[in-house]
Image 1: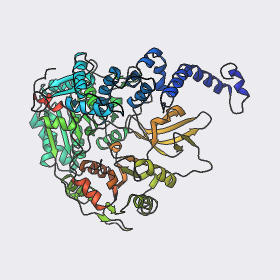
Image 2: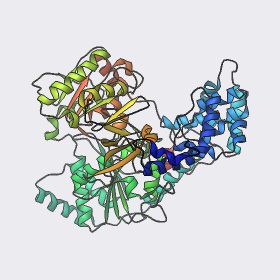
Image 3: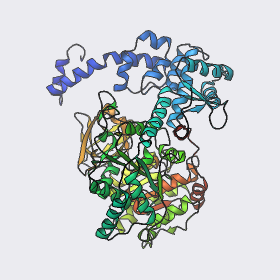
Length: 629
């Protein structure tokens, strides 16, 4: 009927003429995809959910798909190597196929990037590919894969570089875009650092004296050094933990630059952090994507080396969140005569994306750094601050047990088993938090090391949704992919959506659900950093982009602060537990933190020094001549 007499759909109650036109348009757009989906259903055990990302599949020559289904994994978002491999096996393609081996190499490098690496040593890459390609009737030949990586390097499908570490004979393997981006970032930073800043230092010092007298606030020697260096350095890193005065120092630097007559730009990777930066400086702040003027049509930034930012002084807060690509886009857009201040806590978790930019810049010893270490008297009263510093130094703090009359802002509830932890979290959120004057649905954020498990985000989201936003007779809800969304639910964006200008990690609230149009409207913090919410609408096909966010991972919480943070720490999270993970989670709390879990799990996290080292070469590129390919 839809194919041949679509106008008759108006006879169906609830379908108006407008809806018929929408259905007709969607039907035409999906016709090509229908054939692909039928093909995938016939060749894969679990075909991907139909979505806009599959529209490019429909344009792929069908012969290409059947001859080399691994092209699907390379070209189509949403179809990974595992799905393509299942299709290939069902089509009878041999497990030692050249297509399979080449895609395996690229997939291993992509997986490494998801774990934060910019490259893999060739030996480790071969090990990963062997593991990936091993099936019941086939054991891949490591020598063949080693030879293949060299061949792919000659064809520039991957890039190889020698001399990793101190071993000249060790080769490292990049996807080309990672190599060129890392090299471009290092080159551009060297250019900026090579341009001296002319400044009247006595005049700056006189201004600092007047400023401190006017505000009645003294700068510590470290803070004074940071302000003076900000006046005379082209690029400067300001780092330090909680309570050491990064906020006041940043505000002072911005005030100095303003007094010097400089055009100033303030930015942060997330909307919430940009809003906070605006509040502390009294100046407008934007997300980096908004500052750099992202263009969804080109999937690139309008601001670059040819069209740099008009600002003469740029502050980027939460710089630990900068991954390789965003850092490169930022530095490219800094005008040659401009100054750049990167503010962040280098002891936090590194970026979600590939690279470890802030730490690499500090390690290179080429970028000036001021590390604030003095904890101020006001901050010393906060156990969140003092315990965070203790954890960062490898000491298990003495945590105050939860009670109805807490004496500090950092509490511990030693529910021994994960199941007990779930109930304990419900008790804290539903009973203790309101008694302490907080509003649970607005003020509380549960942060977990992992998504899986009884005390992972998936299970806790279902539990907390029932507690904080239960169903009601007049509350609209929609279900997709095992997830129920209701008006009032807190949600998180899971991927970068450049058309909607919402990005991985952005938090919002479901503002409306239109059941007839199958649309969900979410209110996100404005990307310009102000308090006004921005409404973003999703249709049902795109709801996989968002998820419930009553509980999120600690990684996804970077750049945000919450009045109350609850941290479940259990041994079932063993693989993820680390000192900087616990430190990052705890420092997200502004007024109250509650750690839930056995003491031995917390001690394990404190003693695990760091998540395993990321493979990056940025620090070496900055500190030495450009390596040869």
